Image (cartoon, rainbow, N blue to C red; front, side, top):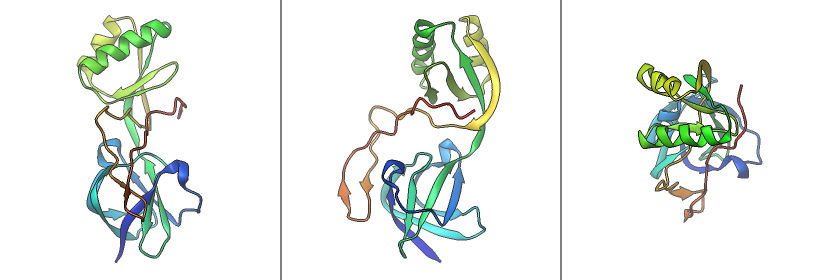
Length: 166
């Protein structure tokens, strides 16, 4: 079985991927795990420290081939504010509850929770059910660990791109 011992951030990925692995947002924080690829193969991920992977990041197999990490489609709420100020207020309420959120220019995506939906609607937001990839904003204290095959340590931001997936 092939092993994954390094990775490349999406923005630095130049080579085509030989396969993909589809993972939900809460399954993309990994250090050591057996991964089932979309083509039916399996690889052992074995990194020195845990890494929070984003959609498009690449896992590098010991033979040099790359596997693309794809964000799984998840059952979410799309929260639409009245305006930009309202979006900021809604984001504050969600952040105050420490909820993973993907914040975009005209909407916020969160995991489905009927209690939170009622709160948001009570605050005047339009809330709709969607199924799409989910890339929450990273926490302020999140470290990405070792990057690349050279073992150097650096920090990179993977915060939301502002692009809609749906």
